[in-house]
Length: 332
Image 1 (cartoon, helix red, strand yellow):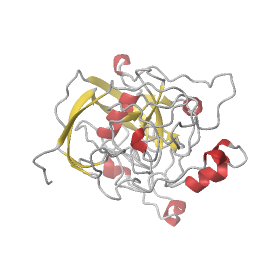
Image 2 (cartoon, helix red, strand yellow):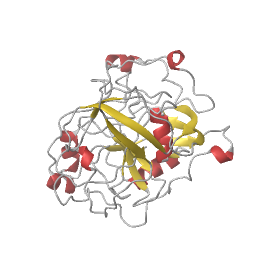
Image 3 (tube, rainbow, N blue to C red):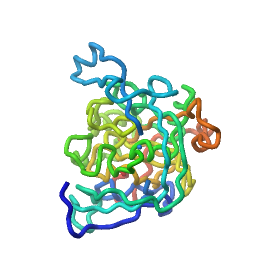
């Protein structure tokens, strides 16, 4: 691995934020003309899917044999077991940037090995879906769901939304990798860096034209399409493809957070979290996956309290919160 003599050193913490109201647009890291949002710095033994089917073969998708990347431990077959020590604050040094200084977003091409933990670690053991909802190899990730709707979907199958610290641990592993697959941003490893589309916000706000606009904007891929886009614990597509709703454990400014980034030219790293969007926000590239307590985990090691289960009694907002400066696009 090449190392530059001078790099940009920064501490990625789980406590930094900028408060933005419900009408806030998106993380400035998302690309396109949107306002700055919070960056919350925030992975696993490998596992995989079941035997390939004729449908998957016809779709050109490669399945990974369970024997290649391990077992799920005490977790259900469609989930991976994540056990390790989560660190709230680490030092990461970018050796080579893709984007020039001052660019938004600014993506890193290569990191130095992650520095030692600068806070107190917390041991965690839990189960996480292998894939983005509906958690099926070869399925199209579901988007346009509010944080409440995502939590309800997980609850309906006996699971819950992942806490942001759980998601981070599952993505970066015990080595605390910047990307789920390593220290260098590898072209083609995950579904990232596609051109940022211009969003027709009028079409997105109109129930009669919303689905067509979402379909036009869609640049995601079927879950598990890229066998290299897998975290140390065996969870696929954790960076890129679609943003994922998580529980913002700080609760500031909202209970909702977004991790991983989507297919656009955004950070797409394990640590950052977008917190600009309130719980009823929806958009064309926002999806989710579920977590669950590990059956044999001691109560003290279990993940944060379950995310609020049911949607509020008021009608769920189905249109994106407008941006004061342009398209409201989330991204990490």
